[in-house]
Every structure is written in C-alpha cells, then in structure tokens.
Image (tube, rainbow, N blue to C red; front, top):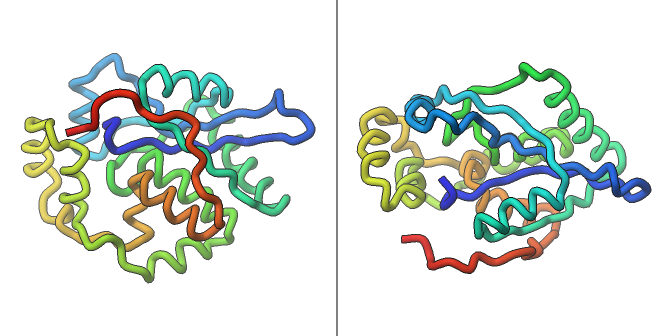
Length: 203
C-alpha cells in the first residue's frame, strides 16, 4: 500500500514547540498480515489513530525511503482549535477505532474530513460538485496494486460494480496525492519536500 501514499495531521504550537504532535489514522495491527488483507478487501479492517512526534514520524518514513511532503494549513485560531479538539478527542478513548475502507474511509479521507471541519463544511460542499480525474475507483486502485496480481484478482471479485463508479473531486481525495493537490489549490500552500525517495520508481 506504500504506492498509494499516506496522510497525517500534525499540531504545531508556536509558544510550546515541545508539545508538537502528529496524528496517524493509518495505525493497525500488522501481526496478522493475512487477516489484515482479508479485512482490507472487505472494508472491515480495524484501524485507529496513534500519536508520535514530528521528528519521529519523519525519521520513520525516511528510513522506509518514502518521499515526505509537508503543507502548513493557514487556519484561523478558532479553526485550528476545532482541529485540535477533534484530534485529541479521537485519541482520548483507547478503544476508539474505525472500519477501514480503502476508497471511503482511510488515513487520507480522515485528514480530509478534519480539514473540512475547519472550513465549516465548505470544502465538501464545493468539491463534491466538481469532477475528479475521470477514472473509476477500480482504475485508481489498480495503479497502486500494479504488481500485486493476487490482490488485484481478489479486489475484482470482492469490490464488484461499485468500484466502477467514477469519483468526484471530494471522493478522489481518498488518495493523498489528490488531497495534497486540493489543499494547495484551496489554501495556497505548495507542498514542501522534506525527503525524496532514493529507490527505483514503482512499477
């Protein structure tokens, strides 16, 4: 799934930078790969949000040779506090989790929804009326599983016809690349590259 990318939200405190923390909605138990893949394909995998410092998150993805971008959201104080309340609320209950769905509820859509919360729903209202890239969910998914023939076969069997729907701009932000592009367009914040992948291109 690394080819699909990942998205996280970090809180930065100008007056107390030692409090800075990142929230990762892509956390799950990787001890049972077969069960995870089975739940992943059925849209029932159990995921939750974890916290780590910005430095440790950057170190983790650098060690895994994954390109890292950062975008600073220019939110007003009350918007930033709304985001903070949501993030801290989701981590306050140790039993909190959600059923991961690759297209409709994942680490990227969770970040998208929280940003939408900060805009009082305007982000959803506007992007849901705009077309996406014109590719179906299935076509978008195949790009990330291009060399995973077994997963492609099972996804064709289990996803069925709903995967042939063509997502609008709001829906296509299940992929971090599109979320990053919309954040840049909407907030005028170009992504800053913190690390560039050194390995060969993905097939």
